Image (cartoon, rainbow, N blue to C red):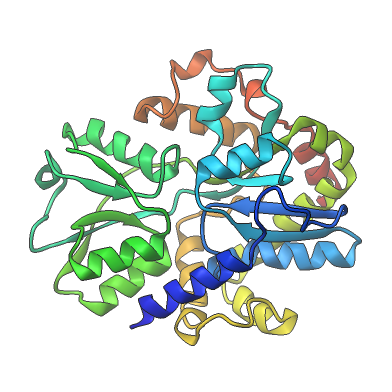
Length: 329
């Protein structure tokens, strides 16, 4: 089964990543850590990293076990850049927090996939469990937001990191409702379209993945970060114009050479769908992304509001993004 092969690939990728606290990083390598698998959906980052390397900046992507571990690793200076959401942690630490968001990598692109034999509407999930990625994740925020929109209450939120792992659980029948990324949604629906379906999320607009780092690192490596942001924005603009580009550049650049063919085949459909949904901001988000996240996260309970009381400068460093935009334009 494709999912089992993918899990084996996931394990291999995680095992091949560093152990936090080890001396595995070269001093000049900027490590981007996230609590998810490095797959074809990561190509927008990997393409940017490869191009930045040609400009003298070395970056690499690794997988860690949870969003909490990613944030702690960044906070403690054990990795340089985190990928995910740090809003709740930053609010807890307060205005003097040594970490800031500095780039919107991707907007929310999760879909609620359910067993249609048991669940046909959001009301059917009232008093039922739902499986999500992790605490502080976009899937948790969407869950709380759906509770408010549909006047329901989940019996529990079960935390299962990894969209591909939740997809397997859905197929095996151990769960009946979860949030999946675009690729795993397509694979589940293709496996049994009569059994599985999607519940509409409506107008949900927020960040799925942000880049965040310590303030001292952003200051010390400002020039290198600017180059990386330029290349990330350049990749986003090119992919929005041509969603077939990641699959082609993967082969040309030799990226993800061990990716199973089933997942290689999903690269272009994923980016075509993501581009249609407007998931890749061409300007890195910045202040509009921060204000939009405040609205969504206070409404969903991910941040303590009201949103108008939140100071964007307590959560974001906008200076590096502004400089990268000016250089790229």
